Amino acid sequence: MNNIIRCAARGVFAAKDGARSVILAAGGGVPCLCCGRPAYRLPVCGSCLRVQLHPELPQKNRCRLCGRELLSEDGLCMECRRAPVFSAVTRAFSLFPYVFWYRELLYAWKTHGERGLSGVFARELYRLFRAEEALHCGPDVLPVVPVPPRPGKLRMHGWDQVHDLAHALECRWGAAVHHMLKRTGGAQQKTQNRAERLSRLSGAYTLCKKRVPSAVPQAVILLDDIMTTGATLESCARELKTAGVETVYAVAVAAVP
Ligand SMILES: [Zn+2]
Ligand SMILES: [Zn+2]
Image 1 (cartoon, rainbow, N blue to C red):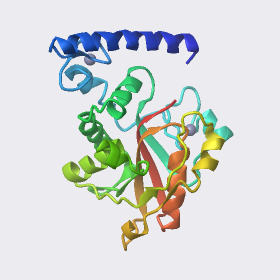
Image 2: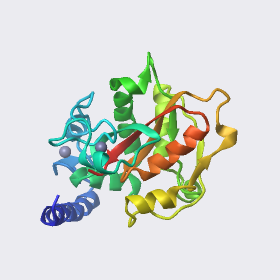
Image 3: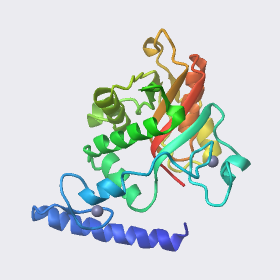
Image 4: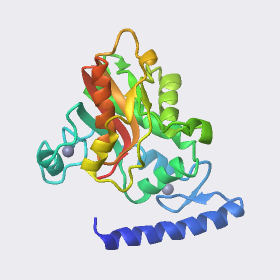
């Protein structure tokens, strides 16, 4: 995506943001982040919720390593052919591309506390788990291991989006959830490239030994909100493998293309 498109998209969203606050003040809902029609309760309208946030499953035409949409390639995307970030992760999946209004939506969820979206995303994740053969075993989806938040985040903000997803998957759909990992610190990732991230992240996640189940699952779903380079997921997967997990599938709500 070139810069002109990016700037234009930002302009549209900035204008929508302005309109959102005016309409909110009038108590008449907010413009849907996707189509601009009035939305209530969530920052997307009912129709976009049913159509745009309800992807066709199982997914077709995806890279069989990172799960990103393929353009003209076959099997593996260019990035995974050139310098694959995943070796401990067997395969990654994501629901949405982290672009345009999806990006705004994720921002509203993570930063503006639109917590109602946790349930929407959890429902779609569960559909993905059921639709992709690798992610379930008979009637049960594979055990879920959430990527842990930064230390103190739950205490400071009262909630964490990945924690919310895991909780919904456990309570509403009966998924087994193991909080087997903890985060020991580590820098914010925003300005680091793939190689820098991987090296800085090694050691940022460790096993939470007292939470490793006595019967270590053979295969798990490692769950995160946004997959940027995949370095976080890879770093977590390496830790899970040291606990004896054989296969780690990574699943994110959205992936940076
Ligand atoms: Zn809409
Ligand atoms: Zn790939």
